Length: 80
Image (cartoon, rainbow, N blue to C red; front, side):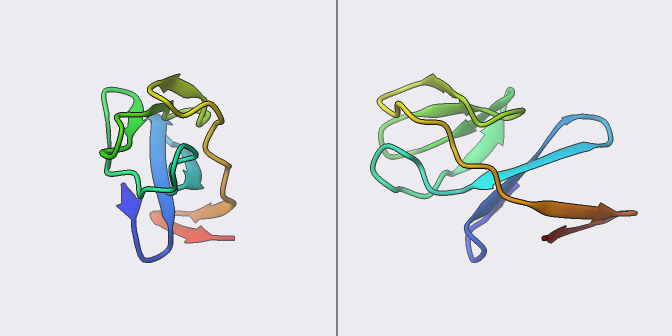
């Protein structure tokens, strides 16, 4: 899920495991649009990042999405 106001994208690679990354594409700074089929997707130039670790999976981006710190408590996910 992309939280545009916070500039963060949160993914759930496996049940009970959550990861968070910057929602700013490392190519030209566009906001990523969505998470689908295991990738975080940027609409500007079609860069794709792995939802489990933020690594580049395709497109013109050459650097991974930086990780963001989150805390998970029950069903609540918060920026750390």
